[in-house]
Image (cartoon, rainbow, N blue to C red; front, side):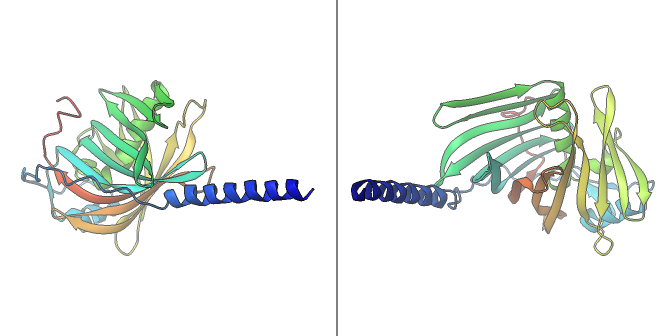
Length: 276
């Protein structure tokens, strides 16, 4: 009996130590990606459109002024956290954007700062895709199809405030519909049709507080309410953009990814990641 008790306590102790070590590895942030080698190019500015709903016009003036910079491409990088199977993994990311058209985000989830999951999600040529490998090659996830297309296109527009913000007013395919004095609907292209997001603006700062819509999750048959929240607005290259954003599935009630922006460059060459 004493021997069995000692064995049980020893095993329990080892599991506790391993669990503590494992948890400790998830508290170590990865090293950030190095700054993008090419610097922002100035492509001039455009006068603010006059037909925007009041909260949208207030947001544009608060972030870019009366004249908006032309942004054709962008590279955005940073670190954050990703909830995978109930565990929060530290992550680093670097994303490449063609304004209102395409994007690709490379990601690494780490343990003790070591990448154990690598992959990307993308929306290129009207098609969404997801590729992920992990656990030193033991795990491989790949997905595509019309539901991925819809989800990635919606994410691209939901992230425009911190990737290619001027596209929200300059893209002729986009329109804004007024809802009330602090809310408007962003309507944007998707395939041969349209999709939309509801945008809420802060009454005091005129900045975006949140954005919400309906998005397919994985291969589920119906769309799920989706929300993004923005914070920590800072000025970069003359534009005020959110540097902290979270994405939430409304039925779960908590974030599944947290992104903290650490660098941005506009109008740079990205053909290595997105063929032009």
